[in-house]
Amino acid sequence: MTSLDESVTRTQTRALSGAAQKSNWRLAFDTITRPSTQTTTTVGSRVAVGSRVAGGSPVAAPVASLPGLDTSLHAAVSPRVQPALEQRQLWERRHRRQLRAVDSIAIITVTGMTALIEAMLIGPAITPQQQWLLGTVFGLTAGVWLLLLALFQTRDSRILGSGATEYKRVAHATGLAFGLVAIIFVIVQASGLRLQLLIALPTGIVALLAGRWFSRRWLVRKRRSGLYASRAVVIGRRADVAHVITSIQRDGASSYNVVGITIDELDDRSELTVGGASFTSRGNVNTAARVAAELGADTIIVASHVDADADFIRRLSWQLEGTAAELVLSSRLTDVAGPRISLRQVEGLPLIHVQIPTFEGGKHLLKRAFDIVVSSLALLAIGLATPFIALAIYIDSPGPIFFRQLRVGRDGQTFRMWKFRSMKTSAEQDLIALQAQSDGNGVLFKMKNDPRVTRVGRVLRKFSIDELPQFFNVLVGEMSIVGPRPPLPSEVAAYDGDVSRRLFVNPGITGLWQVSGRSDLSWDESVRLDLRYVENWSLISDMMIMWRTVRVMIRPTGAY
Image (tube, rainbow, N blue to C red; front, side, top):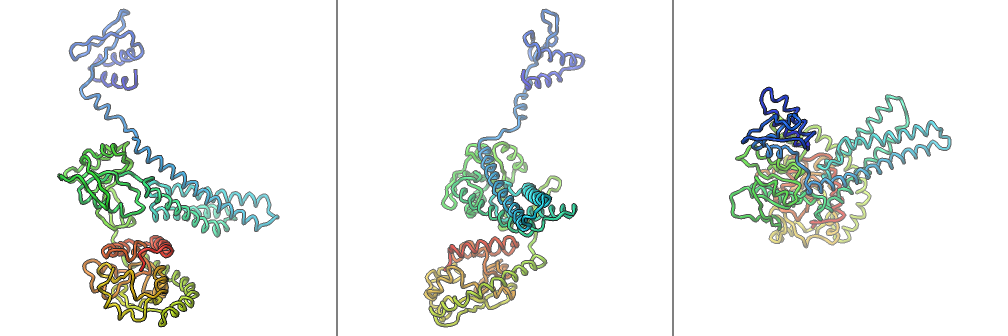
């Protein structure tokens, strides 16, 4: 008899009354061990218990099935992993193994090379004790480093390819690893860690971040070809479903590939077209789990809450057990970055906390210090290149080397912004005649083939070299390295609504607008990116934008 049969027998036996119950347990055991000797007698729906066989031994009769028992037992069986979820877990494990190998190679290489350099500095006179110490330092540093990377969940599937979050976890894990190793060496009063701190720490963090960056680029390419991405079904009202799909399509590195939708509206239209992609609504919100299974999806994105059903999310999560890895709830908190959002439980009620942006304090002082250091170093290099750039500008178009233009900065304060001149000296006078030919977005004047731009100026603009003198504006505090685009007074006069929030921080040489399409962006998109930066910036995000700016300068798009 199977374990399930035993469970049924015990459950049914407990339903018997009084004195017969103790005897029935013994009889049930006999039924299991000697099934060939059983005889049963049933009267209607009742069971005759205590029948005897030829030998005179009492034999238990099987109890009749209780109504609904089979259904209840079936519901008690835990869900099993379905093929779609197995496929996702497979590629996630494969990618984690690749990251683990890259991290291990980087750490073992830098710590091992550092130990080798120290051994070479000691020379042939190195003693066995010194060799043992160097080996201990190497092993301890590498081991603790790898351990902290694992404990900080730097390879968690939820942050794979996310960029800033992944890089911050790697940096934090590295800093804590070397801090722990240093504490251990102080406690035991040992030496030999100095070169690891001076060489392995900076070299290792660069190697780890470079490895993660290359891994992220590889993952993005795979996702664009439909691999290593979560197959998602989006459910909700038509407008909310379209909003979610648009956001996913806008993100070129998105980890979601929408394979189906379910529209929760009484609507005869079952088709939805977003960004050139067409989707057919299937089922309803109550059959979302079945639709996900049919489409081989491993993620359900709830674009809008079902108001009439307070328990919908909990019930849906139960239905998805074994079918999907993620149940994602979309929020209309648009352009609110992760660091400003936290989740807190209050008596089982999940509350989303949104931190209110601040525009002064220590965070801004740190940004200012960063601007001063970077702009000072940049101006040293720019000073060496300026004579050659100036000569090229003058030969092509005699006149001033620099161009100064009035711009509006933080809190509406105006300042003169410096640039290398890329236009004819009569550019301002010629602007009025060209206004009608603008290729801009309605507020900004832009022309793809502006006749005022000189030959050298086209090269300067294409690679953003004309903006290098703005590092002087950064040094004196009028601008920042990263920030919103510095507007003209005429543009500010046309601002309406919330657009003036762009002036809450210093304008930047580069920003999200610079690395997201530049002149090809619409006015609304430019404003959205600037406001997003104003409210959510961080020093880590600034560094990432600076890195992306270098790539845009090498392979320019939208620059004219």
